[in-house]
Picture 1 (cartoon, rainbow, N blue to C red):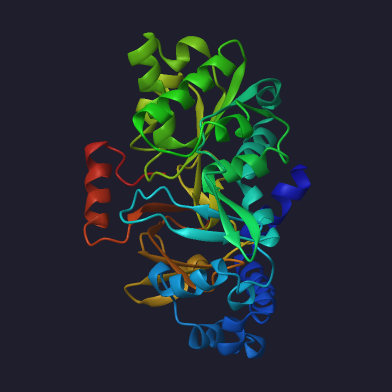
Picture 2: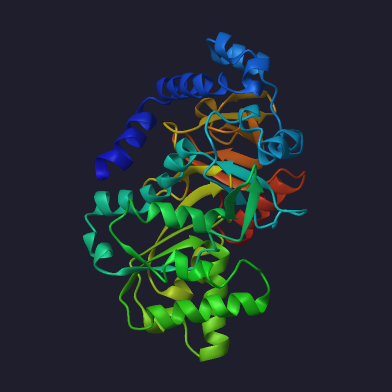
Length: 371
């Protein structure tokens, strides 16, 4: 299990250029089987420069007409495989939820979320993590059903979908189960979250919680809920050894004091992921994540032009462009800051004030851009 999850990642971090070239050729072979790929000449592309010339980077609004066609049943417009389901965003960045299709190849890549746990356990020989359970605070993996050509396809939130699939690759049980969470429905009202939090408390009250994984802000809200409704904190019930959290910039800097105040002196490991995929995770004690160079193709639009993620200099920043099994050169809308290979941080969304907000946060918390 360790070999399957970690060795490809370790090897790719050692030689990111070779890893990225291999990923690009693998992705292009799949793109060439789609209508969109044929229109962009995917089968004739031999190198990165040709790829950039053939495929302009596109954001979600640019992809939406193609995704609508896929959702209507025209699968090969954009996909080389039948989708197993659809992931939706939580709508936290404004506007309606985005719908992202998940293929078998895509889902295999999403199980890389388990690398954060397995890497920590492997490097620190902390196998006690596997003697307890994972406090599952994820969003529902099933929210509704789409009807496509007479077939029913489920859609849900990516954090729940990650948990459902990653659970089969890590030797630790998630409590409550994702199926139990799904039964409560996918709405986001305060009363709906109260039901999920009560379910988590009921199922885990007498368990040995050694791991807390999921969305950082949800973990904080759960702790606040316990304090308000039951007059105690998670650290009064459990002594988690490890927290693997994502979906929020600044987990290991801005939010670490609050997390440790609520959950105790636990180890925190950051995951960088989105609805479109799991792109990296913390590799060691340095407070930054290392990319999954073996699974995705990473470019960054910097002030000096578009370059590969692994080519970025220390202190350089720009907008991430990621190629996934379903989306070629997708402008995801995140700003990435480089700390020297292989360390990066996502510092926020693509807004003019993002870098200034990050700099103020580093100054006000006395982190001062340190790893």
